[in-house]
Length: 153
Image: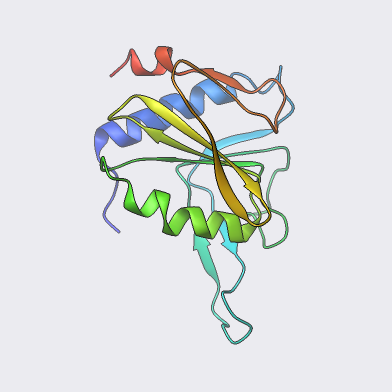
């Protein structure tokens, strides 16, 4: 895959920094970019290890090297690279659901919105499309004022 463009990476860095500033008041330990999340195999015959590397991972647990199968982070965040966001709303959505990650956010810099998804019965449901203040329902105290983040762009 090609590397992220400057705007995408700058947004990821700013959002990671804002999240890390909330750690002391919230119930999570990790807020970082580019850490691997192992995915369960699609079938019992599959033997290769598949890993996704979300733009941002937020978790109460600190991984050893990466998040292993059965020990997913609490929240993954992906930032759209294109307006359509095909991969983030299809392949990544399915992969993170299969990994059992309770919350998934899709940050849309084109519309300046954040789609928040909740895992229910093995599939993600869109909970809300938020602008301004975005709060986590799984990590008390985690909230981000996206207006402050967007102000830099």
